Length: 86
Image 1: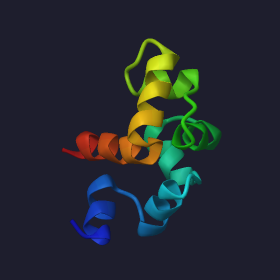
Image 2: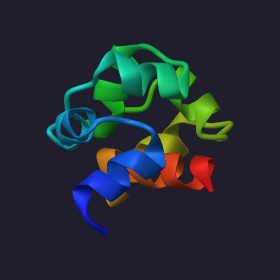
Image 3: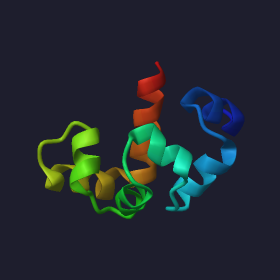
Image 4: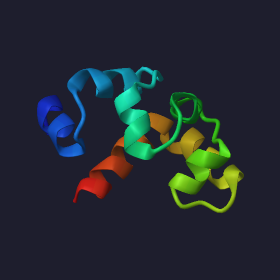
């Protein structure tokens, strides 16, 4: 899948996706998850906040944090957005 197609499928711009992969949050990504930009940035760095854990469907922040560390926070979020758009 090329970058433009991926961006279109998740409803973001290419720049939003690039920033997410670099560990930076944009307003568009934060709005997509209905959390703050800081929550997104923390998750991409392997730290889960209560808001992110709840948004991803976890009842425990440790589980969300383990997932972010093991699979890479940005990849998890992109996968989640792809699932949301399906």
